[in-house]
Image (cartoon, rainbow, N blue to C red; front, side, top):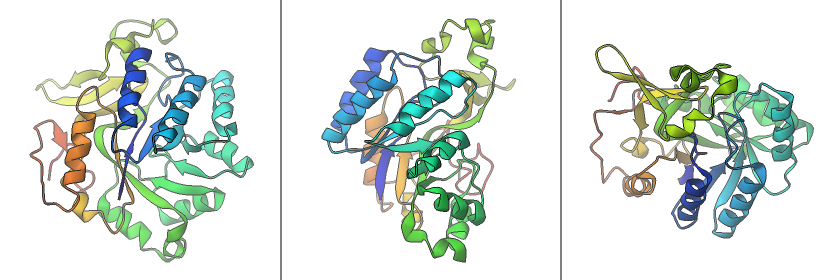
Length: 290
């Protein structure tokens, strides 16, 4: 089982991003995803910066993937996507079907990100035929569901053609919108947001009237209020999951990687906090902890 580091979902200053990835280079992550997946206005790092980081991380022994945006809204964003597709160095994670189309036209392999609506064996087999070599399970699906899909004949026949990856730590990316919720929370329009999400390096919490944190607002992205944490489910994944993904956190990312690796066989279980959940994987309500 390998461990991957997903793309940074929040808007961090360039200096902070560069320092973070210098630490990633010295870490035990096997795979690193790079790229802006939420909002094209976040331009602290440009494509050339991500490419330089990718080369540095590859030199450090990491497998690097470039992640596409999840929601494309303008021609300029598609031109930026073309740069990622046309790179000749690194695998691309497609988080939008438009990216899959471009990659297929070029005859290139790709990773299907968790935002791609792949919920059954027929869709998965179709994507494999289009060039999928790694499948990131949609975040709301369970471990049992994954097992059931992989056991289907049309998938069992091609199981050695792709790997599976599961988002296992961090606030779950649940939805994207044409509107910017962070800007709206400051009474700004999306077009005049002044990049205010850089003031919320962990997103902006949204609580219900009873004080329960139900969501995190991150620009146009809505995340789960509770942090998803499958550190204690690793010993049930060995027959179905090839790669365990951790999402970058403002603090503690590398400490949690160490905890995950120590508990691969279930011998070092961790005490989850009141703000952690694992319900989706266990086929429970998303905010539940089993």
